[in-house]
Length: 127
Image 1: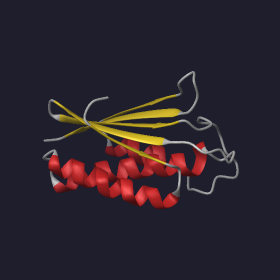
Image 2: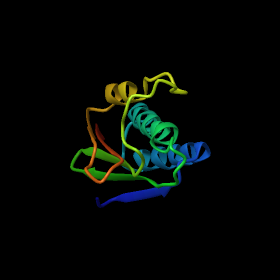
Image 3: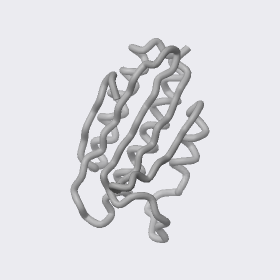
Image 4: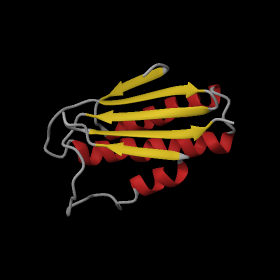
């Protein structure tokens, strides 16, 4: 993916750092403040999910967030190399992250690549 990319380890403190970076990117891309806030919250929810769930087996890994302005849209791609999506009866969260992100994005697609992990692609109208 072209554009801007951030890589981080799955640690809770890194969610805050990514949230700030994504908000700055959205604002530089010309998004209205309210729309930039929607994008920031959606990314925060997906990255938080990766931190809480993707590495629950104790493994280390990388969460990659890519952002690209394509025509009038900001396209976000979040990739983790964790255990993939699966039900979790002991979930420490409320289970609303994907739903919140999907409501805020204009389009959202969740994939489970054959090599493992999870990929979430979200599109937000920049204008």
